[in-house]
Structure formats: C-alpha cells, structure tokens
Length: 271
Image 1: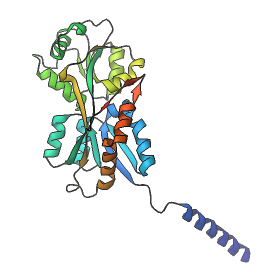
Image 2 (image 1 turned 180 degrees about the horizontal axis):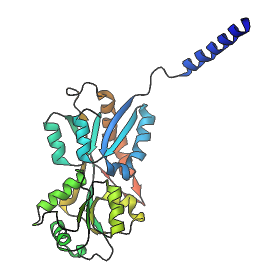
Image 3 (image 1 turned 120 degrees about the vertical axis):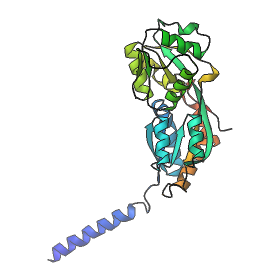
Image 4 (image 1 turned 90 degrees about the horizontal axis):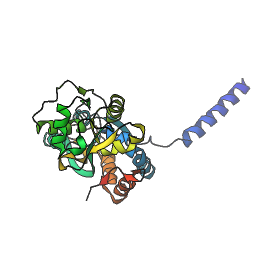
C-alpha cells in the first residue's frame, strides 16, 4: 500500500514539473488567406519564420485564389488577406468586409509559352494583340479559371479584345498557378502567369517568357484586415501586428531581398 502511495506521489511530482515547464499561454495564431503566387514562389517561406521568431505569433496560411481569399475574409474564416486584384479588393473594403488596406509589393504578369512560339507572341505590339493572336491560333491556352487575381487580370485583357475566351483551344482548368504552368508545359501551350511564380518554377518547365512589360500587366499586392465589427472573433491585434511588420522597413527589406537565381520576384511598395 505504502509503495503504491509512493509511486503515486512520484508520478504527481513528475506531472507538476511537466506542467510548470509548459508555457503559461498557448502560442497566438492568426489565419492569413493569400494567393497561390505568394505560396508557390516561396516568399512566405522566407517571411513567416522571421515574423514568428520575432513575435511568437504563428501564421496559418490558406493558399487559394484571390476570389476565394476574399470570400474567406468576407465570411470571417481568416484574420487578414493578402491579394492582388485591386478592383475586387476595393469592393471588399467598400462592402465593409475589410479595413485599413495597405499596399505591400508588386511585380507583373507575363505571357509564357512554347519556345517555337507558333502564334508569334514575340512580335506582338502590346498585350491585347498578343491575346488576339492566341485566340486566332490553334495552340492551347491554359487559363486558371479559378477567380484568382491572375484569372481576373486575364479576363480584363480578353474584354479589351474582340474575342470571347470560349474558343476551342481555350482550357479553363480551375487550378493554382503552379499546376497551370506545369499543364502548359506538358501541353506546349500558352498561359498568363505572375512573374514570381514563373521565376520560381521556370527551371522545371519547357516554356519560355514571350511577352512582358505592358502597363496592362501590372500586378500590385495589398494586405487587408478583416473587419472586426463584422466578425468580433477575429484576432485583430495580432493580425495588425503582422500587417505592420510586413509594411515595416524590416518586412519590406526581406521582400526586396527575396530572389530566385539572383532575380527579385517582388518589389516592396509600402512607401
């Protein structure tokens, strides 16, 4: 009996030591809905460990298209969003779903396709002509078709042409940017991609960059807090701390230093 009591006391002592060794509070966690481009490019892998090390706040990432990211914010399923579709973001804020949008960074969209360039994108005078050449040709065009920022930009450009994106060799696949690039490579087709994901993946692809540089291909990113008046449960203080870190000198410097093969993927734009 006394031996059993001793063992119980010893076990209790071990349990007490273990409890005292545990942190008093669980690590704070916020939820970020962001685009597949920030995930596929590797940018978040470079940023988040630095923020978490500095603050102890963990960031749970939901990598989806911009449209889905904004819907997650609208429904209060995340604490902030990082997206790249200015018109949709403006509507998101004006509808009261988000607050205090901040410019974060930018890059641009580019058109990539097979090296032999059967429709002659290299000779195009502007992105509208490039899209019209792809519509008139007979080479696959792979669209994300997922309401992402890239898909929204693509549809904006089609609206400037005389073509509706329903021609026979147009394929809307409902996939993220990385998968679309792989499909375009496999099918030897064309696609519109953000430059960051292209640079991160180009060594794995049988594609070449064929058209770039148009003002119509600008790709700005914003970070927006979810409105706590709509969703009181959101972690506003921690989300604001993360937002402020991203646009701080430290966060902006890390964004600017992030490169692949010596080339920057994003350019800081908070100032």
